[in-house]
Length: 174
Length: 227
Figure: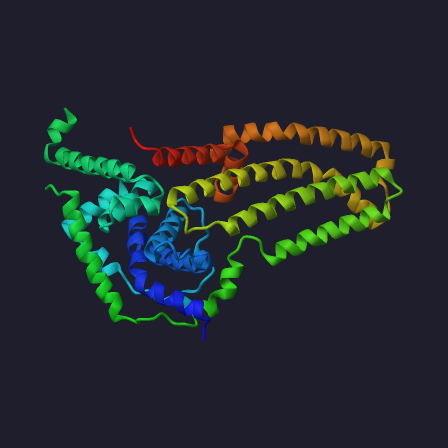
């Protein structure tokens, strides 16, 4: 049996595991890499749990940890957890792939949009897609709400310009 | 085809909702022995392993013993002292960096943590460069002198030929530092077929630091309100 803290952590993790899958989707194309990344996030959440400040919402904290791990993973800063934890022992957090790998037009557009962004803007757009307010996004990323709004508008404009180029390729090349 | 970000958000939310439902259908609570089973592995995931620490302490102890034994021979004592200082300096720097890495709080806002990670990376690259470039001096002539004195009881400094050889080698070693940096900058990309060689070449040439500084600047620009 684990300690009360461990049990509490596992309950919180179980309730928020979708966060890990969604962030992993934003930073990894390959399903196996994504599974690795979700494991890394779970380990880091557990390692950081003693420092969790209850004044911050658990969701906010979980997003911060997941995004920081994902960005470090994306930049090749962290060792691959696959080397240290055999898959048989990996934490079963459920599979997201059938849902997020679905080949709808919108998902393809979304994938293209995310792939075209750098690691910091990805975190911004993932939080926006998840329905967070500018204030919530600002608290997770550590920038001002005004900055969040401006940057999201910029991504929206880029997306629309991208579609305009696709719809009128001759104008784009002229 | 044209779609707005709001429409993409609707699709994302729909999939998120379905994923939440699917996850709820699986175990409500994760296996409660997971943390226990992985405690040791997470500990091993830390950068400084017990083996590295044991090697460092053993090296310090052996050099200390050597200095105590040869306290009446200034040339041997000073040679071992130079090595000892190098081992202490690199070890303490490594420990401090690893301590800072272990203390990283991933629960901090993204831009704050990313800037801190990058600053640590720059410090790590600088420390590696200094220890790599000075190490090739310390771990050649001084190491040979200490080893021969310990194994055969011979003080190589008593030989005029060795003194000349050592002087040339140390001078060459010092000259190699800027030469290695220049070679890494000039031919690093062409010479490096393995990623390990590439990393060393990039580090010596300062490319890693340039990349880290650029990323740090990107984080700062992201943090500041766009015009």
